[in-house]
Each structure stands twice: as C-alpha cells, then as structure tokens.
Length: 185
Image 1 (cartoon, helix red, strand yellow):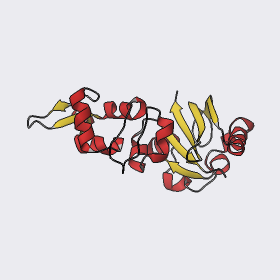
Image 2 (cartoon, one colour):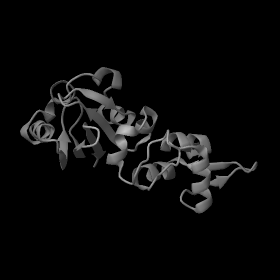
Image 3 (cartoon, helix red, strand yellow):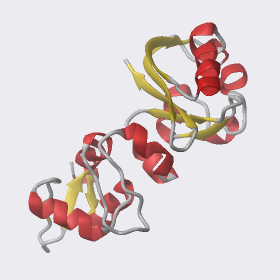
C-alpha cells in the first residue's frame, strides 16, 4: 500500500493545482490523507485520480486553468503527466484524423508506443479496425458539424487479440479538439 501513497507535491502535479489547494482539500475532507511519522501528508494515488476524474476541482491562481467535474472539459488543459495518470486510454485526434495525444494507459492497452502513433492517422494507420461508418464516419460528421459525442461498446481487433472496450468519442467545442476515451470492459 505504501507504493500507492504519493506526496502533496505529486498530488498537486496530477491535479494541476498548487500544494496549498491540496492541503486545503485535505483539511476540509475533499481529499483524504494519511500522516507519516513526521507529520507529512500522503495521499492514495487512486483517491487523487478519482478526484481528477469525478471531483469538482477549482484553483484560485489565474495561471492554472479552472476545471470542473467533467473530465471532458478538462482534457485540453491537462499536461502529458496528468493524461498519463488517468486510469483509461486517452487519444487526442486532429480534425484530419492524426493522433495528437496518446496516454500511457492507451500504450499499455494497445501495445503501441506513443512515439510510434503520434502524427499518424488513427483510423487508417493506428487502428484500421475503426475505419468504418460507425467510428470514422461519425468522426467526420462531427468534425464537419462541430458537434461530436458518441459512446459505444466496440471490439478492437488490430494488432491485439479482440478486445472489448467502451469508447467515447467527442469534440470539445471550446477548443475544437477531438478526443477518444477508451475504457476496457
């Protein structure tokens, strides 16, 4: 269990806030901590990730973007380390289908390294099994209309044994970025 404990600074880094916010959330019960023998706070990594995914996080410092309780609205503002800490696959896709982001969870799930997929077309080069009306067709329609929001169960078959996942493909209207979230079933 001690390997699952992280420092205040590490929790702040995952959430994209300052250490003062982490301490305040610990004091008000938003984020549970344990104390070391020396009185330092430690947080369960899983609790921090759940707060990132489901919690209501705000930061008073103007340099840090305000984030709400929905992971969709926060994705464009997350750092690579924050994307890598998420407990599901995250793929950022340009309007033309090129992969812009690929987190470490998705690397493990797909068996493909981030460096091998960035800049390549997701639908034809990275996961050709998605080059169909359901996914690529809906993606194109969503990009053209400016509105994309599709959740579906799907079976990936390319380069891995068939793998059932829950996909959520959506477009962030504020930033014009497209995201594919991949949850193993």
